[in-house]
Length: 60
Figure (spheres, rainbow, N blue to C red):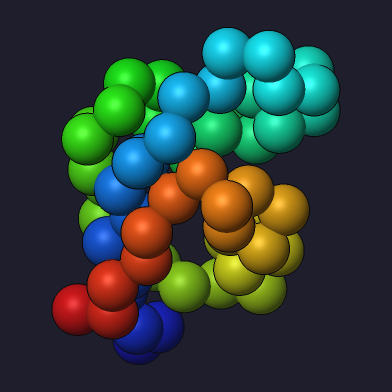
């Protein structure tokens, strides 16, 4: 079983490139302080890396 991570959006996507906005939406976020718990797969890790300045990540 993969490790799980909790991803919380802490900054707005207003004025950000479309690619970053779509990545946030693909992670299941979209509002500040919204959190999701997902498995830490290589695909998710890459998405987190692209929007790391907009989110906080905590291992569960």
